[in-house]
Length: 225
Ligand SMILES: [Zn+2]
Image 1 (spheres, rainbow, N blue to C red):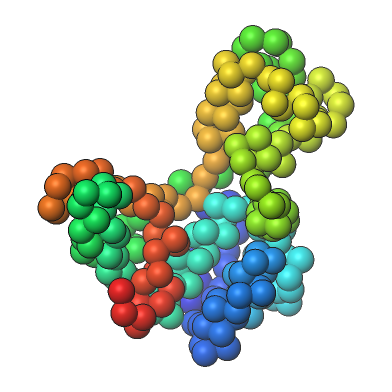
Image 2 (tube, rainbow, N blue to C red; image 1 turned 45 degrees about the horizontal axis):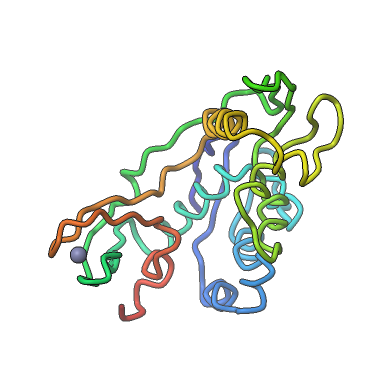
């Protein structure tokens, strides 16, 4: 068994993944519904804080930063700390395959503050926005959307604007200045583990940006790249 402290401060106990979890992670139906990782979590998380009967709802209740942190640690205890990535250069004239090795225990982790509910005054309109952190429930709703965009990712975190529930219209009609300010305020209070990978293409020097969890070798290192 492996014990870790989550970015939210709760303690978590994990067991390593087996073939059952590998099958869940490759199940297309579960991937589409956004449930693949949730099912893996429900299997492999043995305890969150005081709770030692961890079900799907408990897993969805977890904050997104805690969830990504858990996914990274689960990968470490199941497959080791090192991930060999093979990102392809985004420069269409190059398309070289690069090789980088990332040690997962080196990824920066930030802790959540105690606050769970935030009030922010928009600089242009003066409206007051109440918002919360992203969690598993919201991630699942985003995964099920046909075309998730910046507005939906922001709106899903907003509880109210000037005391009323937000609509799609309020968000699309909001000025760029207010949207940018709100987005950076949401980012400012976020926490978790930083899985952004940045490097330069070995052949042409183009900047390559990727997210660890988006790379196949993160969870399936045996698959030939
Ligand atoms: Zn290149």
